[in-house]
Length: 242
Image (cartoon, rainbow, N blue to C red; front, side, top):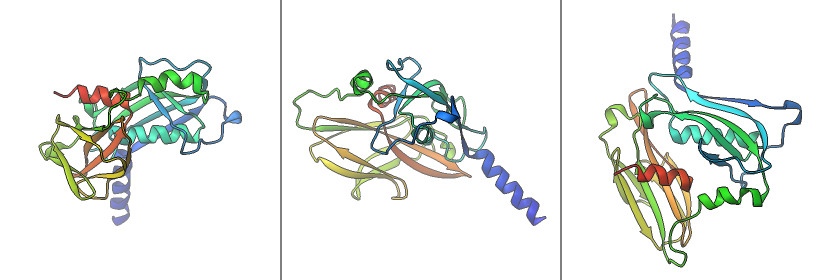
């Protein structure tokens, strides 16, 4: 009886976790994994893949419906980047993405093709779309914090505190955002509520950063998460909030 109960728990947890599936075009000609210092770009459905990009394969990220366990937007994007990097790809071209932002599912799902293109000239257009929009000679930086719809359940009205160096920067409920202007440059560690979930940001003069906040429910317990989002996606998500 105990073995059956334990098996049921394991099966339930597995069903609620996000899954990663990677399919390479040519397994015999797989590329070596990319170094951590090489950025992996996430392209939306409307963005074009750069010239001379080589198709590496396809990936699917997602989880089962119902009570979800850590399968948020931030988690899905992180897993997509990890899968692409392991396959030697630096471009993720999304063909389908949906999740808690649009109330379509508890877990965030991504279906994408992954490409390899390390030519700086070919990547210039991608980089230009993700550049800072601040005035060229400004002497400050902007950090945009926001919280979109998430699967917080009963925790939806609970404000999430975002801190840096033990100082509270802002408190966010669902649909709220906060623009933080600073001249304190350098590396900062941001964390939500407890230091168990944190992200590092290197603030530079004239740059802008988008930090997304989420609350995920693991078996009725709310867990706050934060993560840096590419400027192009972050700008769209931030501006969608009133």
